[in-house]
Amino acid sequence: DAGITQSPRHKVTETGTPVTLRCHQTENHRYMYWYRQDPGHGLRLIHYSYGVKDTDKGEVSDGYSVSRSKTEDFLLTLESATSSQTSVYFCATSVASGGADQETQYFGPGTRLLVL
Amino acid sequence: AQSVTQLDSHVSVSEGTPVLLRCNYSSSYSPSLFWYVQHPNKGLQLLLKYTSAATLVKGINGFEAEFKKSETSFHLTKPSAHMSDAAEYFCVVSEPNTGNQFYFGTGTSLTVIP
Image (cartoon, rainbow over all chains, first blue to last red; front, side, top):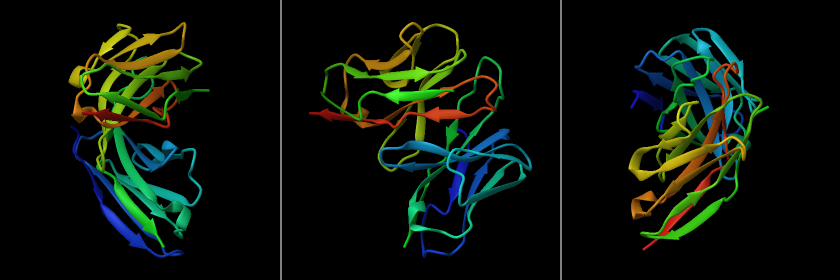
């Protein structure tokens, strides 16, 4: 398995506060992703990165921002947390870009966030 | 545009009986298709993937999936369920030239009855 860690693993916060989640990988994978997982929705892409300082929005990006200053770290920030952002957040990485053979995604263990 | 439909949100089987988890996809190009498994309170683990090679794909833990272009399906099967197979399963599609984006189905929860 790719070495992907997420921190914190659990967090409780209050509405209106900023929150930053960290994803760290040791595999030198080019692509990194942030997903949220909610019952009945599967995993939905928040943001992804295709290189250092190169990021793009996913389908549920409102209220979230990301940064990638180093290959190994991808940060997700909830600018002002709301109760609707209570979820489980997963980070993932992958190697290749484009082409006929898409590479596998490797997932971190997840972060459980509760916004009160 | 690509999308994935998992036809059953819950599947229940008896231990030792076959497992069938259904997945249909929509894609404009030749997609790559994946099945992931998620055990309770865990991350996602790759079971198998199809990337334009053999249409019958063998994965870990005795799982298989067959890519059927004419039916736009990629159903997951296992001949004999084990208690440890109880988990959430996700079908995922990806297309070339989409910036390495992956699209998830909503998941199928598999229960195995002893």
